[in-house]
Image (cartoon, rainbow, N blue to C red; front, side):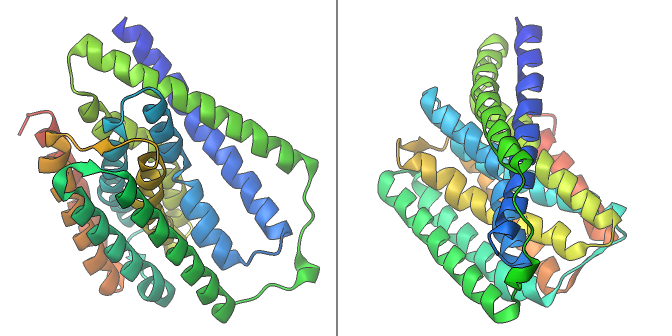
Length: 310
């Protein structure tokens, strides 16, 4: 049965990631047709869009009555985004330069979101009122991004592309694949944890977090190869903010989200440390290749601690 559920997990993950890709691509085109600036599309649609697998799987976890998956998924994804995705992107891209836009906008917001989430998580539970606070910060974030965008750039209406029927079709196909993939992903995680007698949070921190971080990995690696450091880094800044605020906040409206001991004692401090390192690299204006290699070593060390190898 383990092989069966492992197969279901892989297939569900493919649907989840591919569905997010279709949804993200069509949303980008629809957003441009609606007259949204490239900056807003980059920060909001790409940032939120690459967090869709985490959000979909977290909502599916609430429906399946396994709320402990939600926080483990969000925290594990943030760790993977920084140590694995940025680590690989910095090594492959020969270093990633940090633009003034990221320093002015994303670094302070990621710092605030991480500090707020850590403070809320200190009692190992996310309750309704705390979820409201997380979502309220998202509203402030979006408002700030829109205002910042309006000050920095505009896009003439005459340059707006038209929405194709294909874009609308793939929007709904992507949404369906995302929802279906998320449901069966969670079902398989629960089944595998029972079969192997492993905590659900362990699988969520590693397998689910890695799988749902694949969109970020693909986007950042492609951007790094093309020398588009702002896209590679901005993708992670935005995604990590949304992971903590939306991926946890929305499910927290419908159920209390427990944080089990391994997530609280190991993964949460690792996420805070990873974020601090990422912020320091950002303030220094560049993530050097040697820092990327160091991030990868830290991720391997984290996996070793999770599985008790180290």
